[in-house]
Length: 453
Ligand code: PLP
Image (spheres, rainbow, N blue to C red):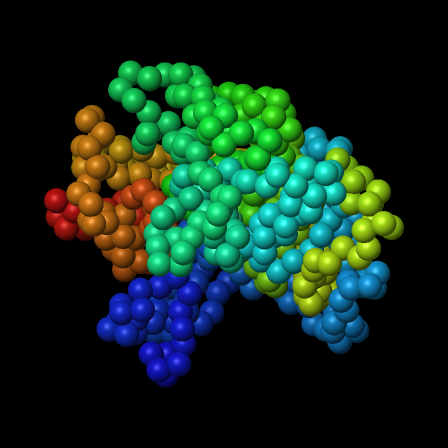
């Protein structure tokens, strides 16, 4: 039935036609069961999104109650539901306090990380039109970035595999260097020298295009899909100084890093960002309901508010913006995160996960780097660590290892930019589950090694 009817997202269509789908049918906590009854530890939390773990009655009950009471309410024309108002207020307070960002002003709701970034894309253009800067419209993203797959967000994404044959990126979206120190630094270059080179590359791009044409810079606090790239020393501080100097807005894409992934509530707090727009999704509802939020700064909001009477209705939004069921689920999800101190768990167990993998993989000839922050860890493969020689084009060691890991009952992601397996388990994971997953992964690597040569 699958082969004859289902069009899979981000999948090799020919592989699905040859091999059929991998069907999963049940999950609880960090454990996922497939259709054949085999159990897995889900070290990916789905797509970095099931922060509170699977099978939480509390979230299901919140959804059911909300569906019975008010199954739908939109936000168009000034309408609202109580739950949309309460969630906006709670998110704003949380973000202001936990991310040390008192300058944030309002919350706009959507349904996915991609649409949140599209909202940011449109908001920035609107803002600059309203400011009388119609030429200031270009966006700078980074190579290796992942910002989603709608037309604008996909263009912001800096991984060419997603652009190929879709006529992307669209005009006016530019990409600057990828700040992956381990992979892309020159021989002998210190981390600070590397940061300075990244900053110089950005400055050169801005100078080439003309600062009066550049509207915004978008960045994930930690680049997730690219390969779990932590910002190199001093990176955001220096980048932000450049942006400020040229009146360029900062969009923080916290779709992965939001809600505890880095061991703090938000990556904005972890890396001391001063964003003008923040994109949130995934952990907002732990993926029990498709939902996103865009938090905008006073600087943007004050202009939007000031021009409103003259300029008329703000013509952007979606049927499902602020869906009351999603808002109720998000509230229940935040209750769980707070009550069980899952952000603290991420901070405490992140180093445990990193250490467990480092210990077990140490000395493996193809494991070049194991890095992470909070419960967000990447294992990078190279053909030769010492000379930083990559595997030949087309070979995918991380895919082979991930396949063996799945056979041994542990799910990791094989990422599409550099050969990295990522680990981003539910924040509710225990030390014992981490150790079990690391054991299974290490034995999968041993089993896979003959295929990697
Ligand atoms: N931004 C980041 C940083 C992401 O990791 C993702 C998805 O993985 C997105 C945006 C897109 O989110 P969605 O798939 O919900 O559209």
